[in-house]
Image (cartoon, rainbow, N blue to C red):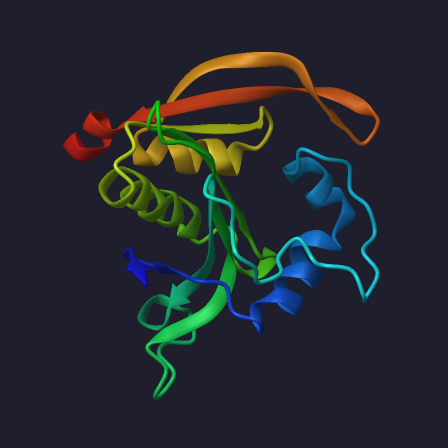
Length: 188
């Protein structure tokens, strides 16, 4: 497991899937804002987007867990890891140009507690030190202040706005592109 100050990133477990699916996929408004494809219902027999499966070479998927000693209820006896807090992904990993995109989604009960910036930082550590990447990029809706603030706290710079680039719930919205280089991350 990769550890930060408040969160750990670990492999997805089967027990994570129904929780992530219920809280991050079945919330249509939230999922519509966070995905590149339109939301669609998934029948019980179909594969959840959070299903445990082998990832393609250009994707690294993690479950985010809040470390027990930082959780509001304190540590659980015998459990060094706290509750499942969400998911984190490096995607579009380009080994030739040594770049990737990153994204996170936290469960509603885990938002607003500083876990986002720590998750982004741990994901950067994985991308830069383990995968040897040189550049990471965040693409998010311009009104997603939580993600923008988390990325900026880690050192990402706003590189531009893609005007009316995302179709979300019947309207076009702006996207913001943020970037971070390995040398910038290492210096911070």
